[in-house]
Image (cartoon, rainbow, N blue to C red; front, side):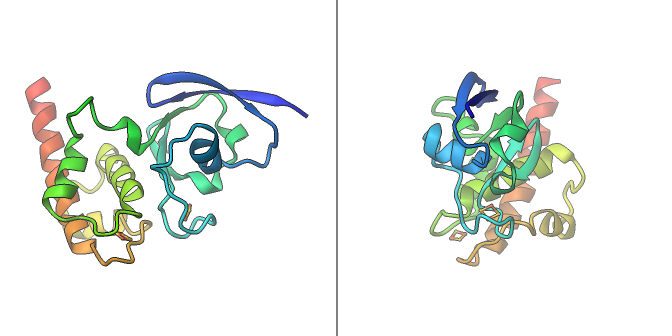
Length: 164
Ligand code: FES
Ligand code: FES
């Protein structure tokens, strides 16, 4: 059986042939589109290293079949920066030491981006901690991660005020 799906990935339209309908969005991104920023820590929905945004909402890419996101708009860590200019969430992670080995970091940053867009945890450390609890970090960078997300929320709000 051969089929293909259409996707927008980081703003670019793509038509991708799918030889095996069992392929996950995570493997499609990493192995077919060579976007290796999205990581595979468990492949079973338990670590969050594969978090990406699909139509603006964060999901675990290891739990989504590629065929199930036909027509979707996907944002991965590679699509956040504008040229050389880091996204405010990326910049905040660097400034607050929100990572060490860096393996969980793309998932953390995409999850933080989703959380900020959801607008549910504005400025509340407890709710940010809860909202980020699907992203594990073995390096124990959680304190820096929470600070980074809180700071990124402030920066994004500031940016939006300036644009409005
Ligand atoms: S690789 Fe998807 S949740 Fe761990
Ligand atoms: S920075 Fe190493 S697992 Fe989080």
